[in-house]
Image (cartoon, rainbow, N blue to C red; front, top):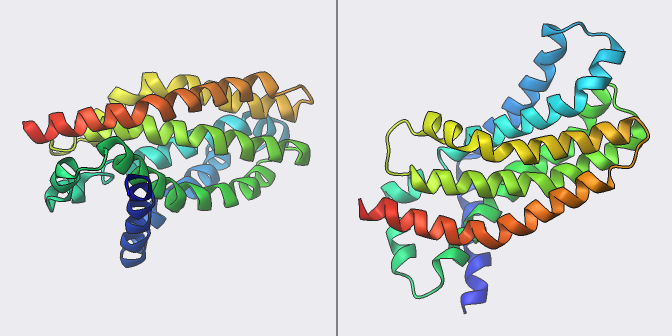
Length: 224
């Protein structure tokens, strides 16, 4: 039964998303707005946009994830659902991982679908678009899982979004650097395999440790 609890929590996130679509469209809209505004604030020359496109897309994805973190556990905390998860006989880490996986599918997968379009808009070569999607597919779960730890620690605090941002920026830098560097190397014809391997290593590390850290953080927040 414990194995199915992961998918039950994922299914619950989809049901919640179907009742409040605007909440989950906000990060995607924010991602689109950030990417579209960059050419307006800079010199919109094709050479410059192509050079900075990987950084723009990755920073926009990071900001979209940060925007969604404040509400990741807050509603469940306020209605007592988190306490039920803690009291459940099933592993709390597995339950929380299912919730975060559901959030990732709802928010990030649509973002991946439009990322390639924005890559073309910013002038990325066609042969680098595959690397862009692969790097985001590997790197965004890392960002979401790391962010979920900070969200769990601050779930009981009012106006915790600023605190989450301050806690996460140093932890996000390796993912941001390797992700944008992979796309940059691919756009210039160089191999992006080393960066993708590092992103994969970070993903394995976060998949292993983040659910346990989230579980401990939720228990700490509920005990206060």
